[in-house]
Amino acid sequence: MHNACGKSKTPDRNRQQSRKPLPWFRFYTSAIDDPKVQRLPPHLFKTWVNLLCLAGQNGGDLPSIDDIAFRLRMSAQDAECHMSDLVLAGLIDITEGGRTPHNWAARQFQSDCSTERVRKHRRNKVETACNVSETADETAPEQNRAESEQKQSQNQSAAKGEPEATGWQELKSALNGSTEAMIADVQRFMGPISRRADAVNWLTGTVAAFGSSRTAQAWTIVVAKMAKGELVPNPLPLWSRTAKGLRADDAPAAPAPAFKSFRQQDAEGARALLERQRAKAAVKELAQ
Image 1 (cartoon, rainbow, N blue to C red):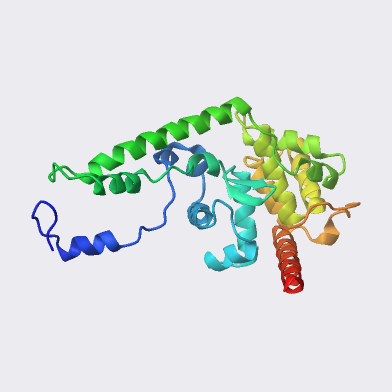
Image 2 (image 1 turned 135 degrees about the horizontal axis):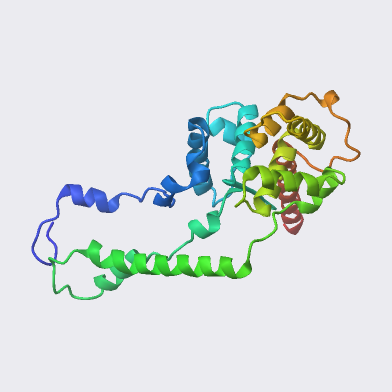
């Protein structure tokens, strides 16, 4: 087969042109200097990267804990603990729709496929310079548009200011009056440049993983150790480990636990979806 310039197309090039593009997501080189990422232990870094892949396959949303455990070849309990640790690190956000990698929408913005648009445009024109690389011509417009959209997204985020972490009311009722003190301690333990939203996200994830009673009891244990003058170099990991090690009967019962675990939220979401599907099927059957 020959093209318009009389050059033959090789079978390898034909196969490359017919090959479907592989799914991908943006991974920024700034991760190598991001302290939140570089302070992760190796097993959590691996989990974080794998969760980015899962989010890329699901439009930015992470699947259920059971699905994460299956895809990452680990137990559901380990997946729950890894998720809590990544929330603590500020790399996973808890939103109204579920869980998503931090700042996913801004970093994984969608740009239009200018390469295909340019290719179609050129098919309708007579080629006048066959030795010009099509790839070089098409990459620049797409990259310029992508950079412009990224700057626009960052400017919009800066204009809106730092949003309050979601789930605040539920968190406040779950911890029965101790919420502000806990958030203040979490933010203090995170360091001088930490944000209140990060502290709320960490506390939200911890309550979701271990329950409000064990979280509150673990907090009093950690604070008591520090009040006695004991050296606690990493209070937040100690807080999580203490909450994880407590049994349900070790902690005072919460008056009305408003928080549900990730797995409970996933199960309720699945039941609600099933009910909607049944309702649609019933309406369709009646219409026939």
